[in-house]
Length: 505
Ligand SMILES: [Zn+2]
Image 1 (cartoon, rainbow, N blue to C red):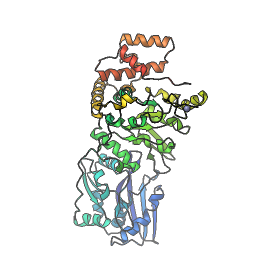
Image 2 (spheres, helix red, strand yellow):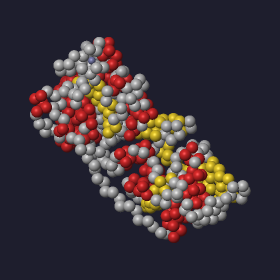
Image 3 (cartoon, helix red, strand yellow):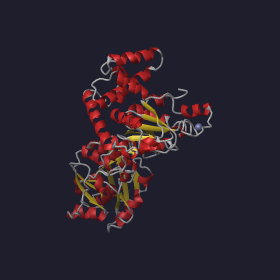
């Protein structure tokens, strides 16, 4: 036997492409060629595989070894092909029965001593393999818990190439580790730890119920960050398939350990205002990695001191906010990652932060203040339905015990979400913030008294057409939280209050 074949999967974004691995060992001067647009990591596989084979008490064929990865035009990356290539080389050099390669799907990086190292992106790779009808997979032992999230797969995990060979040749099994039960690790944070802020907490409930983006403007120390950090505790938990989708994105980014594997709590990402566009949106030269926007998918993206962001950073959020996904193109490949998150922004009222603060004097000029907040204006602000002034709680508020817990708020949000989901059962969207403008005047219009109020404001140019739409969307979320079937004047008035003006807008 001089030719061996097996399958592998190359990930582009979350999508898996099938790769045919073919290895030919023929007579000729000893050499090794890897065909099919491998990246640098994949090109180095030769040295890893050779040492791993030798250190697993097998022989490296001192002949002409050709490894082909098809389709040839598709750029391939990563180290997950090491294990299937090594096994194919052994099969092509008559050291392993080639039929054994057809009994399973193999994935793993090899280290020089023959051990199998974990890989990034295992979860989406296995999802793609399962879609191909693959039933039995062999994965790195350290990836076992991740693989175990998927049902309908027979999983074997090994930590050494020699163990895989003994399994294939002699049926010798190595017990898998115990699969962790899904334990929902609580963040330990709770809304009841933040005293006062009743108005802001209500706005956060609205944001959670309708998926509305929210901007908080307030002095340093007013509690914006504390509130934002607790926002995910009032969101409904993720369903099983949603958890797996989120874990898959984190798996590619290599940040899966940061989250409990089967955590049902929505992700919370808080990139620093000095972040870069690749870190925020995603990127990379050969392997395209998701950015904070996608890691926050089905959760929350929080940017503190947003006006301090470098130019272009906030504008870069427009694509994911509009489409719910991020598309990145690099040479021949285009990767798409989902990125549907609730955006929370916090800003100081002025560059020094003391404007309108109690007992502190701000020395910023009105021009400086206008320039500072102008960074938030424009198309990004159009996507932000709620804007609040957040003030530090008074002494009376601080001393009063806040009994409003995250659990109570989450229950109200969950009830409101189930009302809107039922209303949107036959629509392509599920939350109020996504109601398209034409439907706000038609199928999802508010009551007559509310419309009359809004039209008066429109006529007097007190609100813009966009402001009109935003007010109705927010009013729907308020109505859902209150259990009112259609928003009326009262809900629209409340919605209009939750939108402070910004100078220079
Ligand atoms: Zn100031």
